[in-house]
Image (cartoon, rainbow, N blue to C red; front, side):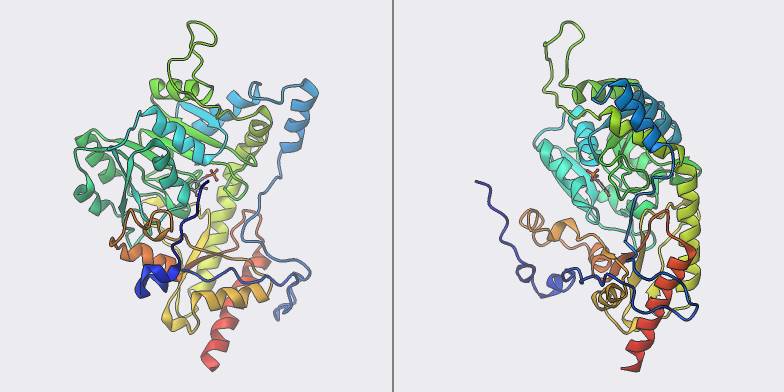
Length: 415
Ligand SMILES: *Cc1c(COP(=O)(O)O)cnc(C)c1O
């Protein structure tokens, strides 16, 4: 039977062991300390993220049930695909079960095999690299750039070899990658670009939406993503052949010639009409969600900038960040470590989450990347975490969170 990796943080060596975050602090269920402004926030924690189901979700779901269309055929699937793809500036959308599967489906359609190389950032969520692993191809890591926390496109050229088949930029926490130089390199070397846009619904690079910047994009609609279908994912593309192939592979690769006749190893990665019904209601609200997230981030940044030792999230002049998660970095000058600050916030009913742990120090990938170092990814892992980031966050909640960060700073300076 499958055995887990036995690598522990200590096995990584002293330098890397110290970037690995501690366990999540226990959340106090009630908000104990109400700030001076007498805000009424008591009795409820502020979650790090939650879905906003404020539109026609229930109405569309009832329609599915009343019309008896609850499986993977029905009108909501094409309606959701069309509307979401259009939001990305794409002609085609192929909905599927979740974001990991969207990545796998796209890579499977490229026919990757052992020996092929796929370049992706060291600083990402585990699904990006796992999707590569499922195909048997070799993942090649690249460090982040300090300015945007994204894949450092300047380091790409050195990583490209004759075996490189795919580059997977990840628009981390909603900030688009610098795609122009990336695409130029990819075109020159005939490499397919699959954007992992799971965190960047509606984000813009030079006025163009993510998901439509590479040869294909992949989205997640997990409950904490900017729009959700509970579980769900979608491939977006302008390439009709790629859209048709992924659509076919998602449904067991049934052939058009005759039923039960299969010319590829396909998958059952189909989305249900129920998921798509929620998705359509969600995508109708996407413009509001983007607006709220940007306004929330602007308020956070304005208030947090006053606090010594806190670095607020980036927004390059050429992008529109959608702040899927509002991430901050804790510098030594703050007076507390990241983990200590998280514990302080948890005590006051504020849920937070640490940044990703980079791929080269993951127990399952440690042997593969042994000896490789990605200093920016490591720094982000050591210092970063995100504050509550839901679209539904109120101004009061944001002010309370910032007040508590300020209070932690003041207390640590007294010591
Ligand atoms: C959420 C996420 C995924 C995976 O999406 P699921 O729907 O949870 O499978 C993939 N990549 C990135 C960067 C993500 O944030």
